[in-house]
Image (tube, rainbow, N blue to C red):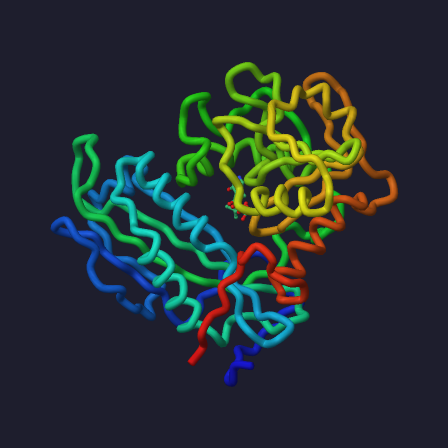
Amino acid sequence: MEKNQPDLNWEDLTFSYMPTDYNVRCTYRDGAWGPIEVSDSPEVNLSIAATCLHYGQESFEGLKAYRGKDGKVRIFRMEENAKRFIRSAEGTMMQPMPVELFCEMVRKVVKLNLRFVPPYGTGASLYIRPLEIGITARVGVKPATEYMVIMLVTPVGPYFKTGFKPMRVCISRDYDRVAPKGTGSIKVGGNYGASLVAGEKAHDLGYASLLYLDPKEKKYVDECGAANFFGVKDGTYVTPASPSILPSITNLSLRQLAEDMGLKVEQRHIPVEELSTFEEASACGTAAVCSPIAEIDDLDTGAKYVYTTTGEPGPVTTALYNKLRGIQWGEEPDEHGWCEILEED
Ligand code: PLP
Ligand code: COI
């Protein structure tokens, strides 16, 4: 265990930012990525005309490191985040960062902040937030020629206040997160800016999130706030196939675990009416792993889809959640080789 740990109540952490010791940065300039630089400043020095500030050349990632039962630090599926980071760069005309350089930066930023990796058993983890920005000064709408990748870390607790307790979400056809052929399948800041009004409206009405329908026809279930959606019925795990959702690495992992558990897995359109047929429903993503859904209220039609009245999540969601958390915390065998154990030297 790391000496000199910060004086934090690890169990009480929420999903929020706190400064840590270091961040790492790497700049693309003159056609090449430079060295990985270490900074102890939480600030960036940027041209006021940088393309990220004007034309949305920005993307980000989110992944976690966990202090396991055996005391080792595990980083979960970072190559998948590296690949998605490349797709996000390509979708906004930014310079893609090679997978190996991305992984090297992740290892380095975790190592530099080891004392902030929450102890095993607290339920908290170290959230790693890589981001890329276009930094060339321009006023014409054109991509930058220079880019910066920054990775920061912050210790976090559960994303939703309720933790692994079923939440209420709502449907509204008044809002879209993304356009039908837009940027929904990549992780760019603009998608989140565009979701803030809808998110606040849902919160004001007492819901944890808004469940978006597909932006083209409003017929199918799309994303659940900033997370993927899955439902369970008749021994089947069903999750939307949609060009406007972000391919979630948590969902990818849960689909594999569902299959391992003998469930059928379907990735397909989910008509909104089918919500009435699920036995269980949940959101999923890195921050919360699974956020079970107690009830979905359709604000436009008045329909209510209720999945639990006891306040407890369903058995399949619970089993999947426990299995994935067990792998991340080194309590269960990592049969698919998803965790990299950090060499702490
Ligand atoms: N969908 C959106 C819009 C997200 O922002 C996220 C979070 O990263 C997810 C889904 C879940 O993806 P992942 O499981 O890779 O964290
Ligand atoms: C997730 O990690 O599940 C998210 O939704 C990321 C969010 C904080 C942007």
